[in-house]
Image (tube, rainbow, N blue to C red):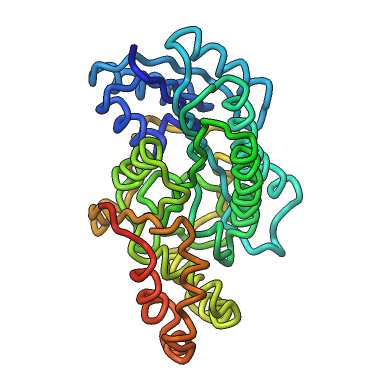
Length: 340
């Protein structure tokens, strides 16, 4: 019997690419998402790859709906062996311009949606792997995505607590996080945008790179998997010189995320599925999006702690002169292993 993977947010973007990657490995695939039409298209693609597929229209913010979806997938495909929490929502806005219901909804989808998926998995999986699809923004918050960053920080805290509990209980379940950079998905056109400017993906990777990392995380015993050559250095820089990073991002993060073209305020897919047809996994940044398999894991399971030990020898002066890539890059290369 084929192994069974469940992917939330599986109808587009990273989830869609991950579903294709798991199907290519012989998995049966269960998909949970809000958009029925895109789920049907995703099912057709996966069946062409020879996979058994079951799709469920559900909102991950609804814990009971997620539990029922898990039951339906198990009934159709068999016991779940991998669960991938991938669904997300964001709002491009300064915090001062956010409304309480927007913050609540981003939190319900991006954080509580992953919590709901994790709880559903824990109740059903005797072994296997739970994959939390996270972000470099779970380590270093960025301006104009405050609600999303808060949700990702919360997910990292929840996951670390659960990991210790699983170790205490000697559970055979493995829990891992995949920390992503910007990825070329439809998100940048679907997200609610209140900035007045067109959003863009800073130095994005193609979704297939993220998908490869998710499959790697599901099939290898790693605490954390980092994607993108700048992800580990950025995480280390945020720990070693947070005030420097504050100032760097105050100057650079706006132009890194916003284009010069004006854009009307959009409602986005925050409360309803994105309108329109099937965009698949890719966004509008195919030109220039990276295809290198820049996937890394920490050698000792804790790159940040190891980096802090090494920083005394390397010196903080280097960090101050080039906070993104010089000292952090040296530290990152010293304590992580490239698997791509």
